[in-house]
Image (cartoon, rainbow, N blue to C red; front, side):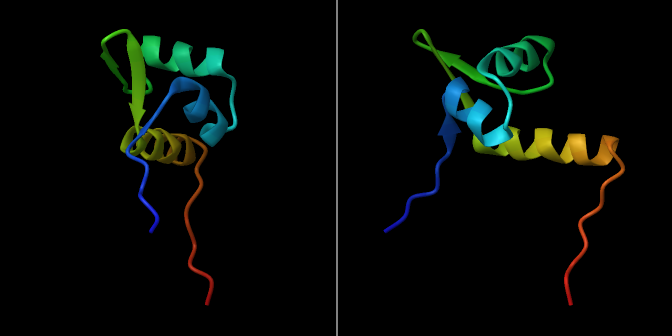
Length: 68
């Protein structure tokens, strides 16, 4: 059974996005990447990673094309 991951630690979010951990914290600080801080640790929701990736794609003028 595979469980869908709901949250990522900043290090794992960085890996998923292909950027540095420092860059993830900078994006969180500027509000470009949403996160949750709870009891001394920070989590990035999976949907926030997907939303951030979509924004980057739109800003770059990329569109998703279905392969026939």
